[in-house]
Length: 362
Image (cartoon, rainbow, N blue to C red; front, side, top):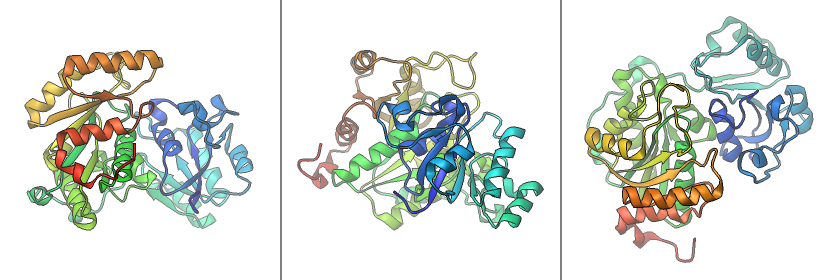
């Protein structure tokens, strides 16, 4: 376990779209050792078992006191693991954060509301000697980068994991793909574009939806160039945000323009009939999204990753077969099927990478 420990607050939302930060940290955290999740509606369960039917020893607790008791000591950090549509804290949530600070815990905040700017939180941080990390806070405007065209200097394949909706699994698939490529001997680095990936420990990332739009393409470009120059990777995997078709979450446009990916893996939830945050708007079909991606950026979709929410395993298998027949591209579920299927999507599109493979790794 990582030396820096944390509990994750996800009251009433763990396992849902609004709890995606907590969900992601339970599945993968390269920066914090996660000791407990707070959600009174699922208290007593194992977080891994609840999410993926695979126990991981992270308990779900009813409240902060229970989480500290389960940890056996006061963790270093209290992470706000919720991502409400408003991006703001409720009065109850404010009280829990202040309680954590009074116990000596620093706070990791991925919301649009910057807690360092709130006098009550600023005073509490000083009084208790703790930090507040506002992950979404962009750099000063004088330091933001405009698009320059340097993306063309990045000569390795750039693969974006985009989707048909927000909170649909793009980041999870990007993390799994990056790990699987590295395990096969293909040097891959992921560029995060949202607060959760940064909290999870992405070495290169920018919280894109907090950047003034004039600088978004440039920030994506600059971050990818930094990753390329520092890591000399064989592949760069770019985490997607929202969807190109989405009426509210348009960050994919800047990823496509600033990152100029050579290929896309598309994430889709077959059982999600309406958009997660906009239940009056139908979820687009993969065929529609692929056509839009091609028209907007001329980019090729090399595979489909399925989000299995509200689906049985048999339904996932049937969907994989049907989408492969309809779309003419490979399909898989990154969480329930062998990770080699994701690697095969990349090798099928970029066969020269086969020269770097490690033999015998599935």
